[in-house]
Amino acid sequence: MTVERYMDAAHVRLSDYIPSDMFRTVLVKQLSIPCGISELPVVIEFKQKFMEHLEFTASPSGYVYGYVRPNALLQEINHMGKQAKNINRITLHDWDEKFLMTIDTVEPPYEQAFYVQPDEVKELLNSCLRTPEQRVK
Image 1 (cartoon, one colour):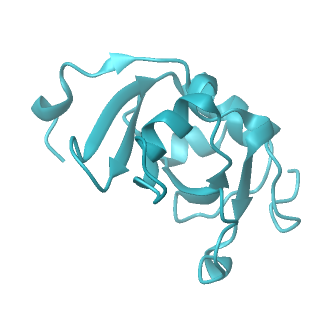
Image 2 (cartoon, one colour):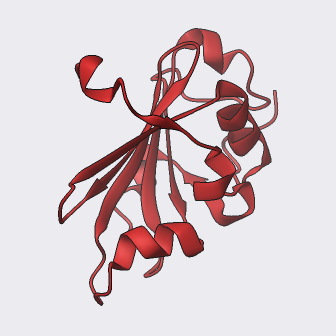
Image 3 (tube, one colour):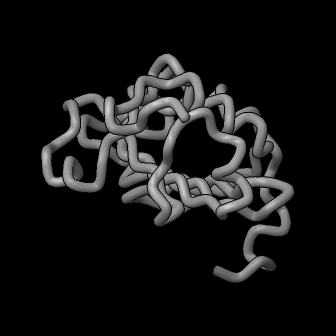
């Protein structure tokens, strides 16, 4: 992933795209189970330093997997006037002082990139519906 490619990415509020009340986590072993018909897959990749700020036990792999029910903003990107899903997945990458959020799509522009604040990712993960295995520390 080249940094130059994302130099002009806009800073947005994560909750505008992924509200915590519309996001749920799943375990790696649950990824083979299809998500809900209206849900979109989300992958959050973070470093050990970020993991220390979470209120629950996260996988030492540094990944959290989940699904989001699209709000109006994601629905606009997802459907683009068609019946089929346009979004393949949403990914958040820990870049220390910020997270890079990419929305991978089937049709052009194929990827939309934004920056979000780490505190927003922390709030999302600490407030969403989590699996029982992600117990509170």
